[in-house]
Length: 226
Image (cartoon, rainbow, N blue to C red; front, top):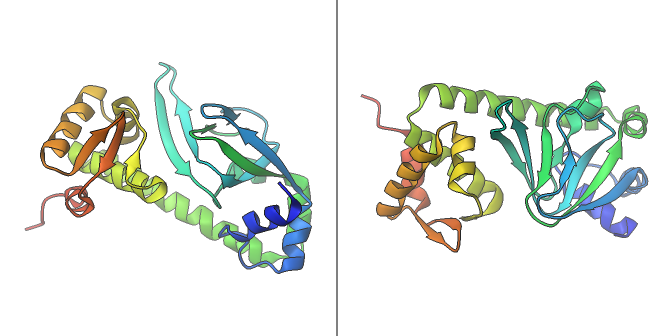
């Protein structure tokens, strides 16, 4: 990847979209390109935080492993999005693992160089605070959903979230959908079967394809309040 491509990747991200061409070129000099195959880990939960990352191509999932070995998927990120930044800014171990779910290229930015870059650019720091605040609200919303919603609502909400990130064709197993919805595989299978029978989703070559987003969104909102 040439430097001009790196600048374009940075410019396409919410965090750095407001930088001047000169600033983008300067920041590009601080980046390191890394490539990952499908299933390869960018970092593991507990690793020392050497970099945070901007995705140039591909997709990343962030996940936690319970002591039982069960996997809980926290979030997905696509091109232009940032991940791993909280641990880097706090200078504490990564709190979760990051794994490529497709052939992926990222730009890594080391902590010390980036902090020096921020010294005279408070507007970039404000953008980071804005993004982190949004993620905190999303996490709180997911916790509230898991605590209070019916399983059908949770599964529908997860499918809508994934579709907004990855498009209507979702390459996830029933187990992965169950983990993200905070339910059992058996329950997820029953819910997905009902969605299929209702013409809301269909299965194609091991993928779940959303057919009727409107019905799925209505299901995610739950029964009308009276």
